Length: 279
Ligand code: C2E
Ligand code: CA
Ligand code: CA
Ligand code: CA
Image (cartoon, rainbow, N blue to C red; front, side, top):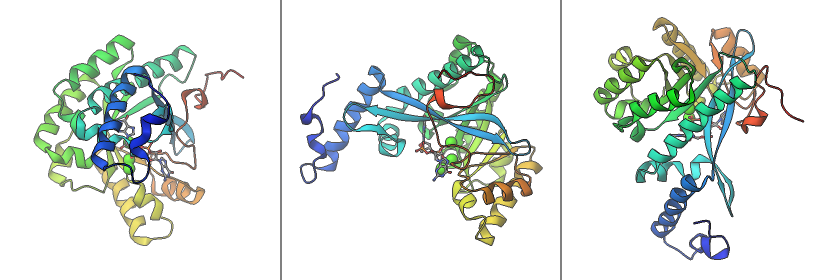
């Protein structure tokens, strides 16, 4: 299945294909990639803002394509979601991330480090999800409270009643739950109040504008207040400057991640306290 060479991406030559055929080629390759070990997980550090220390990492999938190089999720995650390949891809990422947390522990790393993994709408709706999460944690021997599952507001609101039931089952396992891209979807407070979540992740679009736009700053401040009023941890994503970090700190935001601290990197490059990086 590892066919290489120029013929493989003929469908990509400008003007040589229709997008439907190109997509089928991509999907077929992605299925094979999950099987053949071409996926990678990069990790983006997350910082505890008051202390400036590492609080956890977010697992972000990459595809080490044999001819096209390292592909970002934007190039394949939507196709994976629409086709259902996300089921196997997501199961692989979950296992890899949980095992990586255990490897860091074994290497002497910070014991409480949180491992955040993204779940799509389709993964959330999969009846196999809860047993898979439970089985993955049990096989690896990771305490459930070390795992944070990030679910976008949009995914949660596509079928809120079903989402609520699944979140309750995940919560019963002891995993933590985060509402991702908060502020970009259409959650009603009625649902937000019922969802048993632990964190709100404030969307990057508001964080990006907060030092120049009074409206964005007000939105970020409201999200932090809302999170705290509901007993949730406020996390900001997409922090790119010291000014944004300082503004978030001043607002009392608990945690932050973004290029200012670190880009997503391979596991060997994550500065986990206690873990000695081989030279
Ligand atoms: P997300 O969950 O919102 O993840 C954050 C994205 O923002 C990541 O892009 C990250 O690299 C990027 N980012 C982080 N800090 C900054 C910053 O300071 N500035 C800017 N401009 N960008 C920043 P990435 O890795 O390309 O992932 C894109 C999306 O793909 C993710 O958005 C998530 O929705 C999805 N995704 C990634 N990995 C997985 C996965 O394993 N499973 C599922 N279901 N979805 C995934
Ligand atoms: Ca996320
Ligand atoms: Ca996000
Ligand atoms: Ca986002």
